[in-house]
Image (tube, rainbow, N blue to C red; front, side, top):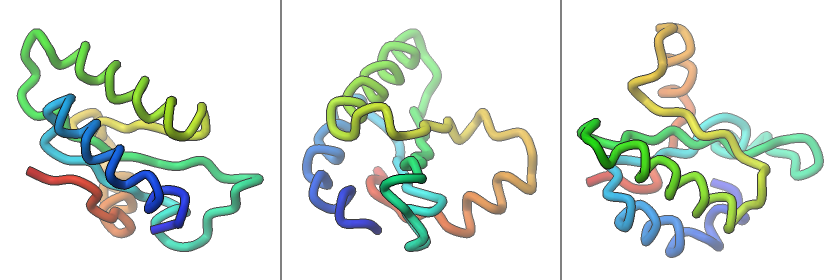
Length: 101
């Protein structure tokens, strides 16, 4: 995990608790050590848990909270939205858990 994420870890965990996430993982170049602050963004995978009437609002709160921490330099992928098996395998290969409940 890169220092940029590590220095915000407490805030990220609080955000995950506030938005009642099931899990949040860092994947891609920031997880593998190939991250370049001039070229790369941060890739986060999240699981919102039950998709009830609050899921959309909680997803937006997560996105807004990460934007406050990292600016617009991140991608946010919902675990259930991944349809291509090869993409899921690639993510799972590099994913580092940040928060799981």
